[in-house]
Length: 199
Image (cartoon, rainbow, N blue to C red; front, side, top):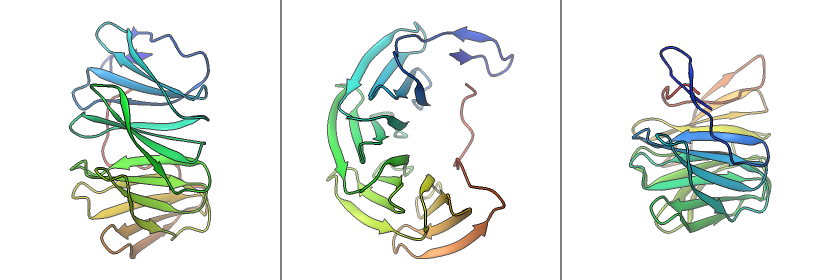
């Protein structure tokens, strides 16, 4: 369901998934929406018509998160199958499968220049990936428990991570060094670089 953020009215209901929807993300232009589900699939929707443009298949377990790159050319997804995938938005083909985590991958974030993807996993690590090569360029192990959320700073030099260890940690993406630690009274959940659309 999409809503008018000013008035809170439902303007479109998007139907097509046959299982629970776990994540949603708008493209930067706001004309396209991606959704992930427990049915292992991702759907791409035209917001104007409410029609499903394409169903992406490739993950073998629940899709945990979906996110578009800032230029809208690439869609990243992550899953309980321990992988993240990169998809060409125009051809709707998988262009990279990022393998290296040993447990569920729960969260993903693009750097603002679209060259790097961060992933957070239940294996207690966050990884930074080169989008062009699909290679892992850095592994962060600052949390002792699951990584619930990851997000880049606007300049891409810093990564914030939230974990089941009740902390948020700020790390240097170039060196992997932990810069700052914030302890919470409850588990840290979703971190955002900026506010987006209301759904």
